[in-house]
Amino acid sequence: MDEVFKALADPSRRRLLDSLNARSGQSLRELCSGLDMARQSVSKHLAVLEAANLVTVVRQGREKLHYLNAEPINSIAERWISRYDRERVRALADLKNALETTTVDSNAFVYTTYIHTTPEQLWRGLTDPAFTRRYWGVEFDSDWKPGSPMSWTERETSTSHPDQVVLESDPYRRLSYTWHTFTLEWAKAADVSEEVLAELAAEQRSKVSFDIEPIGEMVKLTVVHDGFQPDSTLRTMIQHGWPALLSSLKTLLETGEPLPASESDRQDA
Image (cartoon, rainbow, N blue to C red; front, side):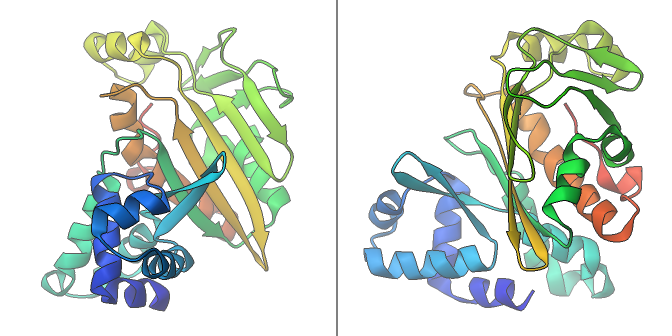
């Protein structure tokens, strides 16, 4: 965690994080103009923040967009922050909350974590029902080929739809699929009200992608959940579910056991 604290120690880097907290998914040009900082200075600071995993970079055409990443703050809070007096770490707790509750203009949810595992094991963790049911409580039925249908089974309730499909599948490197369909049966099983169900069902279908990159003995996993419309109800629901879900996946792959359900707060939607 030394890199995280060093990155946060510089006021200019904190200004960059504040800017991304207000509007995530900005290009280098947008960050420079918004903060009145020289392009070279911004680039250097962003490199430090990216190295500390506080910023995730996603390519969009020829541009690189920068997103806040809450994973390092989650790790601090979950693994050892409770050993210290609450008053002495209140600032970190506030930052953790700000990162997790960020509302971004782009509406994309971006999250990066590093897991001590292999690309093959991580792929299994994302696709194999023997893994997904343990940390997610969900089982997928698919041959994982582009264009193939996906069936989601959660709380003994299955959902399927012609548009619920695999979009991209490059084993051990990249996986992308459309999000599940919101049915009345799913809502009853998930204890979702009819009002919220109607809001979810009226929204356009979103999608999620997983990029897997081996780095030494670790694997870098970047999750991008996008395709939300403005003021999306689903976007609000998943922004808290994903960090807990990915923390449980990381713990499962590294220790053999997922986080307890009370801690992991499995995906909300």
